[in-house]
Image (cartoon, rainbow, N blue to C red; front, side, top):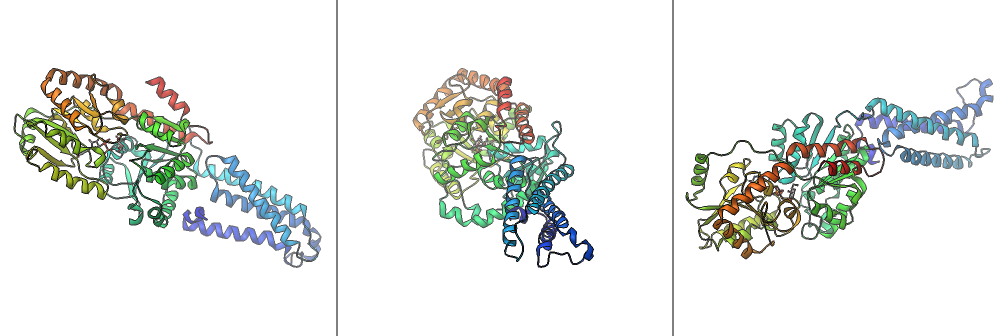
Length: 544
Ligand code: UDP
Ligand code: GLC
């Protein structure tokens, strides 16, 4: 039924006509007198013979229409067996019902004709599907439908922006909300559509419980069917967020399209409610042919929550290596526009304002460093809790010990000039950071970086070599480490240079894009349930 709803209107009408014709053909020879009234009397001796051909034709029609409506590009054999089974069962039931007609018994010839017709029909459906769509040739660029739940520009969206821009001619993006992300995609030449998610469903966040989740079901089903319809002309669906997976997973299944899930979150307490965790893992295990995790920590949390290890491959975020840097004059004018004195030592913290990102920890640490100024780059992007947190940060920043030393720069699309003017870049997440783009951006900008020792951050930075790691949430330790860097410019410079070299070698955008493209191609070509990323994982390990 869902598959019928998602078909185009004309296709739906054609399907109904075919089904009615099929049923009519199946029943016609058995209704009342078995002689076919429109045939000359002398032909009536061929009635049984005609019956056979009627059944063959009718079930052939049923088979072909069933395949065109419910067929798939993967797992063809099992889907075909299920269809033959269901249609044959119907055929048997029909024959049994007919035994109630006086003088009519179960006719084995009819059953065989039905079975044969059904097999021929499904085979013809398959052939015409192949002729219409063409099999995906191994060397063609797979057409990818990317899905993302937000219109804002978080780290996951910035990564998707880079991936989709690099293959704009062969990609389309569907967002569940409008916003600056759509504008950024469009200006990069990526075809983008917004399929709005109803307000009920939008209100469900990663911490939502059962009753809130249930209220949004109608909106979700509607969105899912629209995506399924869109997905039919693509080789791969690529879900970039949790909601994109939960809605896009069943949609991809309906459309017979394989799915890649890019996991940007640590699936654990603190990031997800228990219900949402189970739902996400269920959808990943059921619908995703490949899962790309942005760090080893993300992969480990996915597996320990029940995710399938053999489908999961780790690919970090990739970054364009900045070529043009700010001049001393640019830095000077930016400082003065923010009201920062020329000799002040600047700590930059970039990223959305959210409690788990730990801006409050930095402000607490800053109280112990009277000469330092903090620049907070970013805004509250996603939830009301984030907006409330941002309001509390402004209150915290107004205490006398900090007054005039905390500068809220808001969300900026050009972040590089802010990194350029910093003396140190701080990352202070109090929950494990899944990856942490801002850490790599600080390294690429050749700045010493301090980060929380957890999650992806602890994988990116090598303590005392490419940066300094501190205990998450420990403002005292953060203050000590900042003091250490402030008092030891040589250490700061060495860390920054090591970090820049490592970031160049490990996170160059083109290399990361190639790894993601390999997963997409492998997924597009896989037609069965086997672990599709096994080969790619091996290639990635070899390349590393
Ligand atoms: N960012 C930005 N403008 C801002 C603040 C942040 O473009 O004003 C970018 C930042 O440069 C980084 C991303 O937002 O690329 C944040 O990604 P990250 O992985 O650090 O954290 P997320 O917010 O995705 O959890
Ligand atoms: C998410 C994570 C962040 C990661 C980004 C890109 O937004 O919170 O840690 O860097 O995705 O993968």
